[in-house]
Image (cartoon, rainbow, N blue to C red; front, side, top):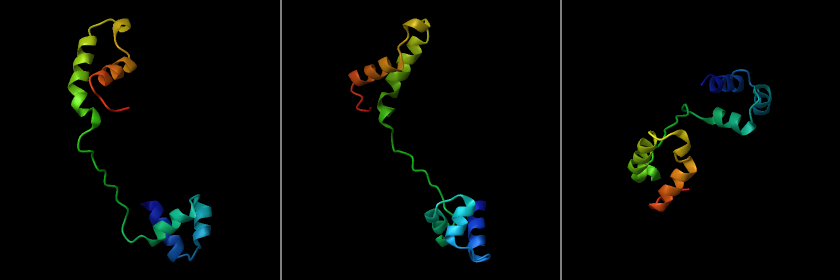
Length: 94
């Protein structure tokens, strides 16, 4: 936010050009122009996915991990083997 206020102050109060502001602050001209023209502060609203693709297979994956936690390290499945097991039961993800 402080950067946006500094850009606006330099542009409106000090009457610096967009190119000069970009050069001095190490920003691109489109970024400076965007912040000069905005009226409201930019807000970031993260949109949560409804359900991750892995959600349907989460129970099976947790079951495998709990079972194999008892095994010695050499007998546990690698991440690749877990992924291949998920693909065998129908996981469409990559």
